[in-house]
Amino acid sequence: MKKTLTKIGLALALTTLTLSAETAGTVNGMKISVAEANKALNVVSRGQATWDKISQQQKEQVLRMIAPSKLAAVKAKKELSPEEKNIALSNLWMQKKMLETKISDEEAKKTYEKLKAAAKKANPKKAFPPFEAVEKSIKMKMAQEKVVGALMKNAKIKLK
Image (cartoon, rainbow, N blue to C red; front, side, top):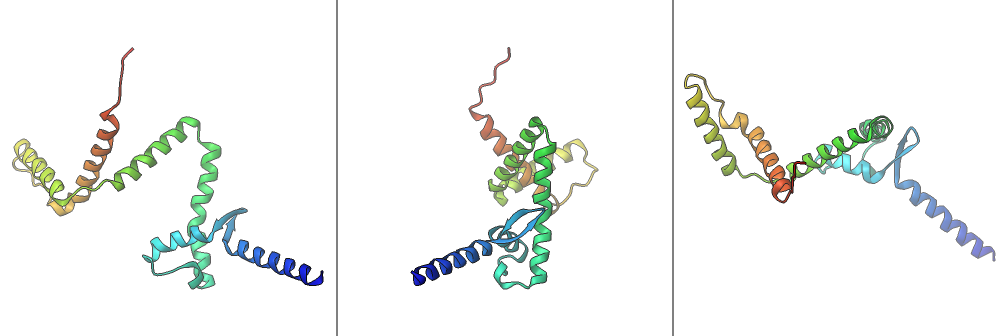
């Protein structure tokens, strides 16, 4: 009986240690998981650091880096109207889809040349920026157009 209780106690202790190991810290009582911390570290360190391999000071910095988004989420839930939440959600979804949409350098260059030609025709004396200076914004605009185009492809819009 004593051995069984010892085993149960040991098992509970190990379970408690495992559960506490999954929480990196808290902000205002909200848990920040080790997985969240590792995700942030992966971005910041480009995959070079993990939670278990950084110093206490670095861990605190990671928690301070994550805390604002946790706090903002709580404020947003409380303070945004349902309409504002829908707008924020749709904007986030659009950004996500735009990031997932790949635009080749060739596609962007073709669009750039069309824009450059139109600008020269409209105002021949005005200088047009080099491709490298506007490449990212052109790709972002093209990705947005692709995402919106896909959304609208099968949309059935009726005026009443």
